[in-house]
Length: 533
Image (cartoon, rainbow, N blue to C red; front, side, top):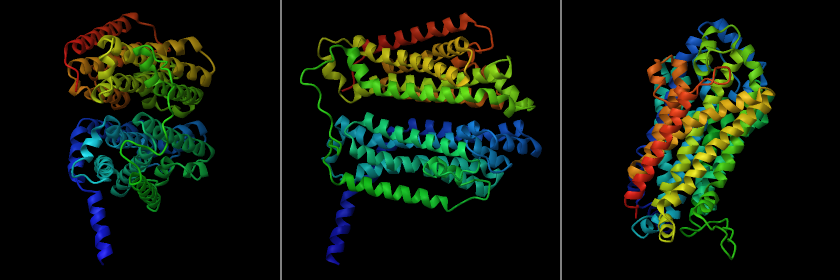
């Protein structure tokens, strides 16, 4: 009994201060978590009305299922569909992508409150107080659990009108995917010494999960492929919300979460703060980074390479789907109108290409926000201070990162265009031009981020909210037939619809000029304000 009491006391000490750290984590993420959860929930909850407008009759929905079952490319992109109900079609249409967003949100939360804290030195200060050894890890996982629980509640409540059981299954599935990647990020955070590497490795696993699911779904039309079952995203679709739910699949999620959490806790108890199990490769004896721009490239090159590869691959996939879009849409006039509203009044093929290029531009806005905010991370972590103490001015330091941010966004859109041409096999010039036109709107979002960082550094994270709102307007707005003034709130709403439409230089040049003004305002604010210490 004495031995058991000692072990229990030791366990409670390991978690001392968890509640306080959890409150602190939720306070720090009071903008980021609501944005991620809100965008994801709105994407899911807007889909039933869209599907009702697109496929209002059982015959239209039955024809859709037949088209998906016979089109391996669309199954790879979205997954198989199991039932003709609106609820089942909603889970099919947004399930994979809602799961991806939940996973990305979860891994960012966990890495932010574990490895980021250690890398900045704050964790060492916190650990010097009455805080248990595993309290920080526990608080990070609980913060991710809170975010996923809210997402599950919103989805379950919003879809309950289409069937409470299916809604609950879908909501729990999304939260379960999020927690699988939260605990995976917790393991990676113990293995690596860099928060950037931890996020990159976990994101790589997430990408691999998507590829495995896509490969499995392209091979079979019922989700039974071994490759599909190797992916947590495949588990989500095999829950089959609104289609004879498979509750036992939740056991797989629970087992994965518990096993990975146990591994993370074991690793956390075996290392010192700031250390890692994978040793950091020592640098050269003589430094090779002679400029602030070279340092910025060294810090962000992994992100640039990762986004570039992803955009090229996605471009190839979307390009390969182009020839089959006419068969999938068929005589559905509502679906045709949505593509035309997103991609212009040209032919259906050009409208589809224009809408997909526009979606890639919206996602590129997320890249430019994250890349610009690297400045804020360098400043708040204290790494910028010794650099600026030398013969490096603020504008020169910022220019290195902004070159990567704005130049990188143009690069990934160019590679997306190259991927489209590889997948589609024709119209090289128009597609590349259409992708590059998106850069003007992407740079406006980057300019807003620079302005927020330069003038209101504490509110710089609000740039994610701006990018999320623009993404939501561009993604959901056309399907919900929202008024044109609402669509015009996004800079992407002013771009010419290419390919297929006529090139209009005036809005593109205006957007580029606006981006220049925003960046100039942000740099002026950065030059005059105090740096964070």
